[in-house]
Structures are given as structure tokens and as C-alpha cells.
Length: 575
Image (cartoon, rainbow, N blue to C red):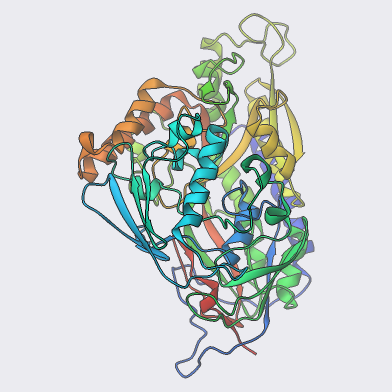
């Protein structure tokens, strides 16, 4: 049964949001049907064909950090830009299965892989891509080691750890056969060695003479990035916009669109820009869905997301090599469980995400085949404030001084210090306040800090003491293995959760000696891992979302599925 206070709070928030959306709408609009399947562009007629030319404007709400090289980025906003101008060695189909792209591969045992590159693929600087550029990327990451976000995608190569520790001058598991052929040997056979492997080259010419630790701050990353994709970067205005121009020598063929401009546009202006034709394509926040659905000549594409959102607890620190749980404030499991039972996630998702999401009790999106059925998990965290209060009582969090808020088990003041990132979207603070209100409803005093999004993740990664409880999201990508996020050695394990049993389950799930090629056996190990996570809740799984895009009717040739959208070189603009 909902508390009156929570209902009033969400009703007030929804009223504020409706006023915000009305301000965004820019006046009259005409209703149109919504396409919410994995569709192709149905506005094309049978006798239409691609035409060349035109400028596509892509809008993004969050200011980008500016790490515009796929080997160094750590934010979704940067990745959105990179996707227009870089290509990976392999691609993924609508079933999230790896497919050859620039490289094809062969293996007999899932331990030794031979990769063969396409010939004649050019970097934007005119240099031809060779396997040496990929080796350069792998060695760069291995040099930086555990503090690099992609270390877990490299450290399974035979000899990578010895190379990082200075015991070897090269990675023994990498054998260059010729400029277009390379053999990669892993430390052991795993089911997902290919999917987990880092498959993005780094231009040796561009980074010649730059030490790996200085690369992320270089102009080659911040201002003049080069890639292998259909468009090349022409101009970067940090935090504001990126202009890309057609790369005529793109290895899959000359793109049709002449220019792409990526702009940071405040969320309150997106609807108006779509209405007046100032924006052709954008991912958008679900709160804008009702207004965007009404816009003439704009369609909405919805695809199942590969991401989830959570509330994490800083349980420890990263010591440079591994995560260590050495913080006590949120160490009590019943406290964490209570904080999840206290949240009415159904109402919260409806209020702040236009119903485009659903609560989850595990850190795995439903679109992945390893996702446990909620009935298999030990706890179903439905909204139950009385259960939350009971757990807090059992854990010793009680209101000792009669002020309406609970003290900790030692009788000291207890305040949930909650952090959330800030952008130009006013709904972020509103939704964060709603979460703190839920906790106060069960007697946990809470304080909210809104932090600029670009500072937020630096603080999170560096275990800034001001970060105690935090809101985060994770895009799982095409490989469903949770290890890169939740492993003991993962720098992206922001809660710094360490559980030996859970760790072993993740390691066993990719070990061919344990699971062979039995997909069902592998899934069951992941289910067992999700059961532990569901019980321990080092982070509170909040929801999973559909990915939603607004697409102008003049943009043709674009298609969507669970893996994202097709290559921009296939798109064209109606002139």
C-alpha cells in the first residue's frame, strides 16, 4: 500500500514535469502514429534511391567530455560521437552474435585465433590500417594496466600481465604473421574470448612519440581524432559541437551524406528543434516522448535497451590493481535491501521515464540471454515500506532521539549522502529528490548532491570521499558477461564489491574446461551469480529502459535493432 506522502510527492513531480513538457512543445503539433518495432525506414518508396549531399544535425543532451578516441573514452556522450567516425574490427548482428567487419577470424579451440584484415582500409590521415595498429592499441592498454578501463579486455591474452609488469618487452600471445594477419593466443580457452577481446586499433602514426599515460590528454584525442569510419572529424568545439565531413576513401564506399554536425542542445529545446527542422536525429530522454510523438515528419524508434540503471554504494576503494572493501557505512546488507524495498520503482519509472522502462532485480538487461527470470531470484524487491522499516529495525537503525530519523546501530546520526549527475535536464534533480524522499519516508535522513556530469564520473572512478551512494547506469554492450563491470580487478566496479564466490562463478562461466560449449550450463552459472547479487545488493538495480530515438522523415536508409543502428555510410537525406 502506497504511503500518502509518496503519492503526493510523485503527483507534484508529475505536475512539474507536465509544465516542463508543455514549455518544450513550442505550441501546436499534429498527431501521428508511432513506430515501436525494429524497423527500417518505411518512408522510402519503391522507386526512391539514395542521393548524395546534405548536412545531418544530430543532437545530444549531455555535454561531451571530449575523449574522442574509442581507446580512451569513458562516457556515453563521447561514444555517441565516436560511432560516427570510427569502425571496429568486428561487428554484431541483431542477435548480438559477432560478425566479420574489417577483420575475419578462425579458431579451432577458442584459445588461439588467427585474424585476417581487409586490405586497403585507410585511416582518416591517409595511412593504411595494418595489424601493427591493433597490436599498438593492445600494448598501449597493457602498458597502462588495471587503471585502464579496457584492461579486462586485454589481460586475458597470454603474456599481457608479464608485459604490464615489465617482465617482457612484448606480449607473447601476439604473433604478427604479416601486415594483414595476426595470431592471438589467450591464457586459456574461454567461451567468450572473442567477444571480450578489445578489437579497436590505434593509429601508430598519430600517437608516435606520445607516452600511453599522456595520450588521453593529447590533441590527437581531444581536438584532432582520426578513425576508420565513414566520416572524419573536421572541427571540435569542446563541450559544444563536433563537425564531421564525408570520408571519400571509406573502405565500404563513399557515404551519401556530406556533413554531420553533432550539437549539444539543452533538453528543454529538443522538441522545438525537431519541430522546426533544426535537428534531424537524436536519442532523447523518455520524459519527452509524449511531445515528440505528436511532431509531424518525425518518427520515434524504440528498441530494447542493453543497459540498466542502479544506485550504488561505495563499499571500498580501488587500490591500483584490485577492488578492496574497506568502508563500513553501507556494509550492512539489510540496510541496502531496505533502501530498495523503500522505492516505488513502478511509480518512479512512470513519472520520470514515460513508462518506457521497467524495474529489474538483477544487473542484467532482459534482452541478454543470460538474464535470470525474476522468479529464480531469492528476493522480489516490490515496493514495501513496511518491509523496509522491519529490515532497518533488525539491522539496528532506530530513531533514538525522537526526531523522526533513524540513528545508526551505535546511536550516531545517520545520513544517506546521495549523489546524482547534473546536465541541462531539470528532471534529473527531480527524480533524484524523489529517491531521497522514499528513504526519508522510512526514517532514513538523506542529503542530495547534484554534480556536473563530467566531474561526476571522475569522482566516482577516483573514489572521491564525497561519493557514498550514487546513481549510475551501465551499457552492457553485446557480450553479456558481467565480469568487466563486477570483477574484483575491474576499475569500473564502482561500488568496489568483492565476493569470492561470485567472482568464481563469473570465471567458470567463460571457462571451456568448466562449461565446454554448453550454453545452458553457462547460463546457469550466470543465474547463480545473479542470485548472489540479488541477495547482497552491492548496488540497487532500479530499471531497464528502451532506447528511444527521434528521426526526421527526410533521413533515409537508417535501421534499428537491439545492437543499435546501421552504419551512417548507408544513410541519405531527402533533398
